[in-house]
Length: 133
Image (cartoon, rainbow, N blue to C red; front, side):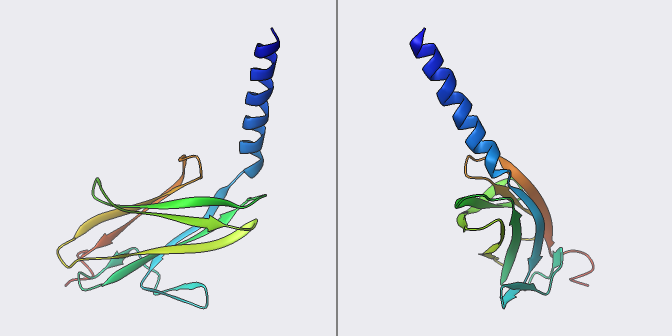
């Protein structure tokens, strides 16, 4: 009986600590650069000549230091996984991905919390019809 109570208490406190973070993503934007900790040239469609795309993320609700992860996908293929620190309740962070000229089409970035749960997802396009005409 004692081990059941101990197991329950450990589970309860683990769940409480996870819920205490209460992380949310208030902003996800894609652009071509970062200046003064802000995204530059925000868009969701980029020309095939773009060399690098940045994913800028505003994370809210962190009550203690934690991490998020940007997972970059080209179609269904994972191209990069970048772990980023979150050191405050309103934290801005970003990662970037070099883009090869032949990587045209749909891209997405999943934002994961430290336990691997998806907090948010956003898509962008390389070589869209407007950008390459």
